[in-house]
Every structure is written in C-alpha cells, then in structure tokens.
Image (cartoon, rainbow, N blue to C red; front, side, top):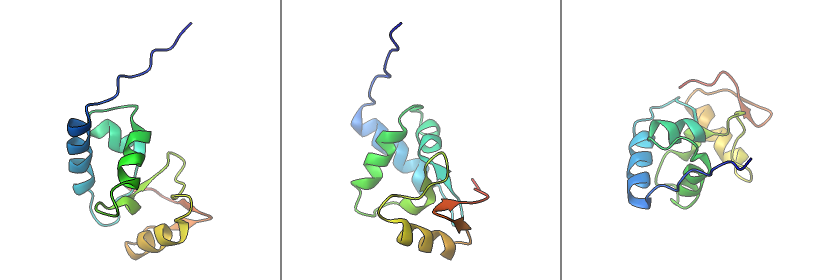
Length: 101
C-alpha cells in the first residue's frame, strides 16, 4: 500500500499563513512546528515551518517553536533556552517543560 504524500503548499500562501501564526505568538507562548503548520492551514508541513524559520535570519520569534517532544533547535540550544527563560518558560535537559500555547 502506497501512502500519498501531501501536496507541497504554494510558497507565497504558505509563508504568509505561517508568518501570521508566528506573529500572533506572545511572550511565553510555546508551540510546535506541527501546531504552527496546522494553524496556518497546512497540516503535515512541520518541516517546511522549520525550513522557513531556519532561513528567516531571526526575523520571526523562532525561539517560541519547538519539536513535538519539546526539544530545542539543535546547535542553538543555549540561545534557545536563554530566550525562553527570559519569557518565563522552563527548559530542562534541552526540552521545554510545561509547554504553554
């Protein structure tokens, strides 16, 4: 049985929708890449959200987004944890505890 892959979103529509979700996040909010994708209307596009954030040069509040398991961005854990802690979010062992969204 072959599983159909989701159709990739149109770049402009996807970017606009994801940016709207990211800009709606407030201090202390923490969401997953998948939650951002779903709220933007593109469920299943969590990796595309990650790519958009990785290529945004810090234009969006990337530190408010974590993996489904609460893990911080690999290679940027210290900065990620510092920014979250400044917003009152608890980080332990490289993961967000008590995720608020």
